[in-house]
Length: 332
Image (tube, rainbow, N blue to C red):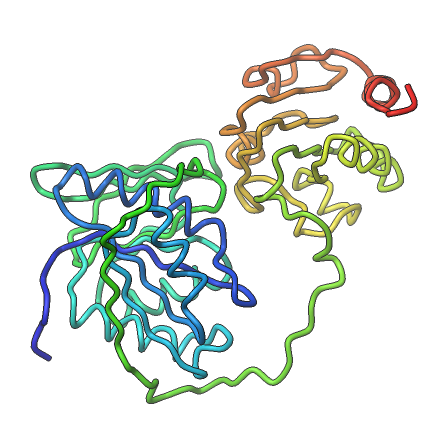
């Protein structure tokens, strides 16, 4: 197919859920703007949706120069075949230099299948991005060896593709592009092997998400049992936040996997992160070390969590947390 354009721009996939763009799209637009400015190229937002209006507003707000839109009922719900075909069609026409996708469940599936279709390399679960201004070659940084090391990867294939963990990049300020160009492409998928019959919401998916919370109160094995997380929930409610946990808590069955913070869970960057009874294993730290402020509560003065904490409280979590609750209570 003849290429209509060859900008070598940096593209961001704006994933939606129930008609609303996910926050990771905002985070990636900020990174794309930084990278594109270094190589003198533009930022493109890729929108595949039944109704692109909400995603177009977000793309405009966060400084996309171009928006590539494929609309239609075929894209009412995420479908790997339909989305990959539409995305690959855009790539064949407009030839991006770099593609950034949020490392969500759908984003990981989309990026991996798309990489195969485009015969391109893919670096997964990245936590830092940089680009060579002369060659436009990306450096993708991601945890390796169980989070004990960070690997820096450069791809020789084109386009250069990577998925980026939600919550690890700062949310950029608004920088509207007044002259954002919108490119509509009418594309209907040719092979859809799976169709969604019904969407059933997980009963555990209630309340504020970890990625959206400005305050996260996490507990570890030191909480000693699921019943003791009630006081963390009480503290979170007083601070307008939500509760998270370490991997060991999920393995014990005390909290669902959706609450896990760490390399194999969610990455978060709240304004305040409380680590209650968490030792500070590298796998957990990899998911929360970009928090603005970290408050650690642990009886062991040598716990590794104190090495990264901004505020260190050596004490019994069952005494410290109730004292905080009493101090913050409106009736205090």
